[in-house]
Length: 167
Image: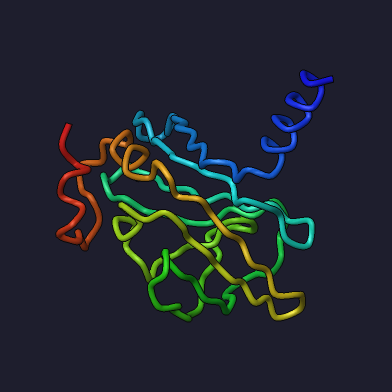
């Protein structure tokens, strides 16, 4: 009986404990330029309105670091209103552009501002649909950025991120 209670407690704890971020690193071979493009991705903690989102940080062929949100479903085209928040910093509003049918470019914020952060939330406001909110656990983002080995690390580098670039 005691083992059953302990096993039940362990399973219950596993179900309610927050999952830590699991970054995956993928490489895509650009056949036109014969270069490898590396992506670091993490999936949002939960879907919203049945739509799954992942945050993707990429080292482009030109050596520039970039990031965007990829959605499982097309929700709009052109621009989209919204807001985002890193950790407990002030919420920033703006408009985002679609890179393609599922990918929203986050040009307003240099990717390195995510370094050292623990949480990233984004709210998307499609013209013809419900507001969507995605919450990303950024635990391990420093290691993910470091693994990309980008030549140019964004156009702004906050002073507190200097340590993540050493290896």
